[in-house]
Image 1 (cartoon, rainbow, N blue to C red):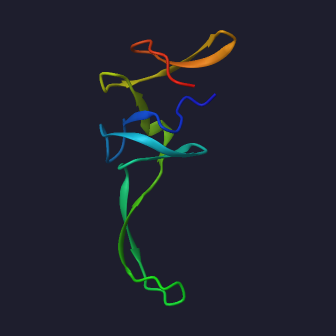
Image 2: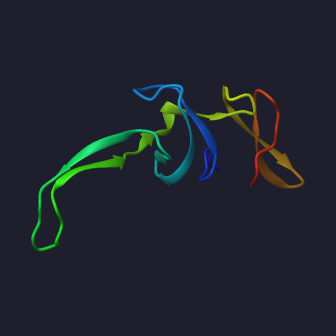
Length: 102
């Protein structure tokens, strides 16, 4: 069971965007893409075959899961635990004990 899932509210705990909040958009392996976090400028060459004009594009880049943590109701970073409730595994926040949606 993954401790961080698509749609979770997270906080960045390391890197250039430390202490920023966002929502998980994509998970691929050990990397997640978070809305509005880790934006980089990508320089593009013009390409006549693809009818693409050149320029500078702002692009979301993935973050490693070790650099993010779930945010609790107070907006602070928290760890995630897993309990068995009614025969199913559920995630909960260690700081508040609040259950997370499946």
